[in-house]
Image 1 (cartoon, rainbow, N blue to C red):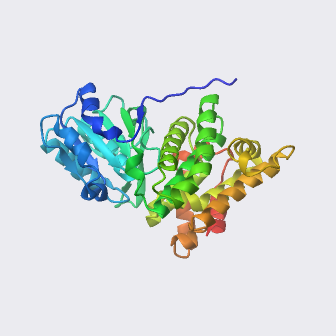
Image 2: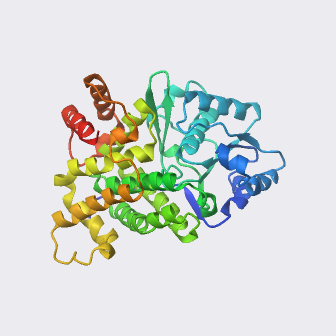
Image 3: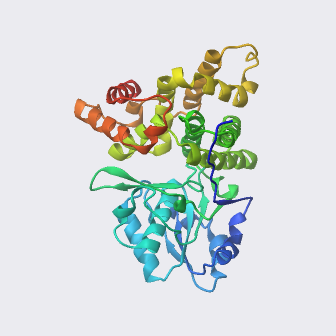
Length: 391
C-alpha cells in the first residue's frame, strides 16, 4: 500500500432539520454573534425561518447578508466583510450553494486576517485558524462544505481567484436534505454532474489517490449514478435527495485530498471568461476530459464502472477494462441527454472561439492548480484541441 496523507477536519452532521441546532454548535465553537451569509431565494421563501429563530437564541437578532450573486466576486466579499465588522460578528454561518459558501470562506479570511484580500490568494497563504465557520449546502454538488478551497471572481482582471488552505475547511457542515427538495431539476442535474466530476477526477488523480479517497469516490459515484436521476425526476423524493447530498459531501472530501484534473482546469477557465455555471460547464467538458485521459486512466475508469455501474450492466463479467471504461463514458454522455443538459460549449452559450480566445483559455487552464493532478501531462496544444472538440 502506498503512503498517503488524508485530512478531513470538518465535522459533518446529516439529518432532516439539522439546522435548527445551529446556535448550540456556535456556542460549542465559542461564538455568539454570527454573520449569516444566505441564499436570497431561500431567505425570502421562509425556508430559513426555523434556523433564524434558533440563532435568535444567542441573544441578538442575526446579522444577515443575502446579496451573493451566482458567480461571487471580490466586491461581494468586501461588502459582506464590512457588514460583519460593523456588527462585531465573531463567526459565520453560510446557507446556500457553492457561491455562497465560497463567499463565506473568503469573508472569514477578511474578518480574521484583515489587510488586502489578494495577499491571501493561492495555495497555503493562510497560516492560522480563522473565525468559526458553519456551512449548510443547499445543492448536492460543489463539495465546498468540506473542501479546503474557495474561488471568487476578480471582475477587473476577468479571472477566478483561488484560495486554498486547510484553514479554509469549515468547522461544521450541516447536511439537511429538506433544504434541497425544491431545487429545480436543471440545477439538480448540473450540480449533481459537478459531484460526479469530482468523484471521477479524484479517483484518477495522478499519484495522490489513496485507499481512503478510493472508497469515498466509488461509493459517492454509486450513490450519484443510482439516485441523481431520481432526484432529477422526483424532486420531493427524500431518499434520493439525501443520497445525493451525502454523495456530494463524500466526493468533496475525496477531491480535497486527491485533487481534480483537466476538466476542472478548463471549466474554471471557461467560467472565468464567459460566466458559465460551474457544474454545467463540468458536465459538458467531462466526456472530453475522460477521452483525453483514457489511455492513462482506463483501468481506474473500469474500476468505477465495476463498482458503481455493475447493476446497470449484467454483462460485465469477463469484459475487458476498455469495455468497462467505455461503458462509463457512455453512461456520462447518456446522463447529459437524460437531463437535457448542454453537450457542447456552443450549446452552453459560448460564442465562436477565435485563436486569441483559445490561447487565452488554454493559458488560464495551464496555470490552474487543478491541472497538476491530471493523470496525463498536457500541452497548450492539447488544451486547445480539447476546447475545439468540446465546442
